[in-house]
Image (cartoon, rainbow, N blue to C red; front, side, top):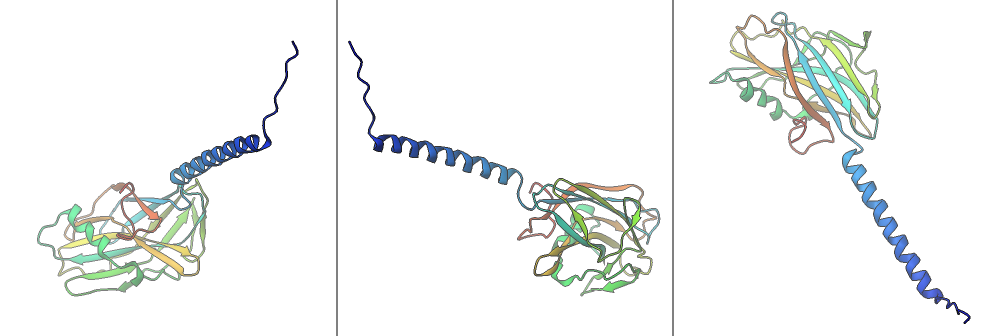
Amino acid sequence: MRRVLRRRPPGRVLLRLSVAAIALLAGVAVIVFWLNQRHPAQDLRVSFHIPIAAPGNPAVTYTFQNLGRDAVALQAVGLLVIADNPTIINDSDNVDLCDRLDPATLKPPDGITAEGADLSEAGQRRTEYAPVTATVAGKPWSAGAMLHIAAGQSLAVATGFNTAAEQTAKYSNEVFCPVVWLASAGHGSAAAVCQGFAMATNNGGVSNTIVARQFRVLPASSGASCPIAGR
């Protein structure tokens, strides 16, 4: 017996192809969404190594890690020193002062300088410092010369500061807050103030003080400008 093949109506074929195409596009969209969630356009992290050999001469190594898909332009780094008289000198409590500062009040240094900009307010002495030395991979780096951190790249900036001129005789505590300035499209620059460490002003110096936590500089947060990564 001869077998008769029936042709499917063109409309049904087109319907099945359309359903398959929609399913494929949905799958692609899910994959793209997953990749964007795992690797967002902006995700810049920073950690700090802060050994202090002698009071007034802090050295800070800023280690950046770009986990985002976009390159980032680093404009400058600095250090904000807050001197005050807390009731109890507790490192974890006092470094929270760094989170209470408005980054918009800070301007990036236009060059390497040892002078501090006085940003004091009632009950505190707040001074912004630019590094007296700054090197990247052993080569000098001047503030204002953009450092581009490509996606997936890490970069370490070793700096030295001279805060010996800080007048802290009437204060019992100092809080050191590392500051980072990034180039911001259409807005010049954007600052992030991170938590560093606190120490009593009568301390003879702290050796090998390591801020092991990693902070998130980008994307910008609606709260602290430099929250602890993972929060």
